[in-house]
Length: 95
Image (cartoon, rainbow, N blue to C red; front, side, top):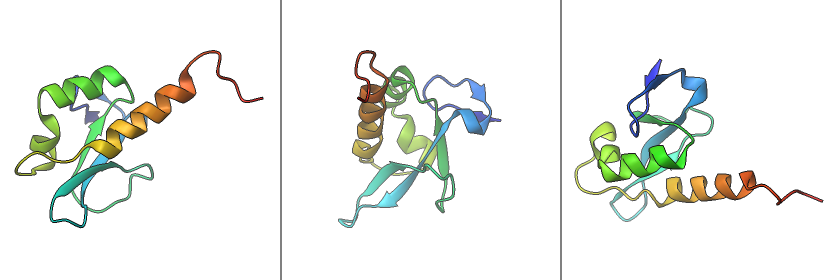
């Protein structure tokens, strides 16, 4: 069981996305989605739901959960949700 950093509900790990902090090459920490759930380091868990992402951003949960000082770059996570949302939009079927 893991806790979503957005809504704080507990779920099985298979139902959540794991996010981890990685170095972005400029000395800052960036948050990325760990699709294989095998990247090293401290992870945080998030429902694949835009509402949970918005709640996590609003509460500044990424920095706390991943123990990052300052404001982490969560662009990769936001892009992952945008790509997933575009694929789930009705009427956009692969032909």
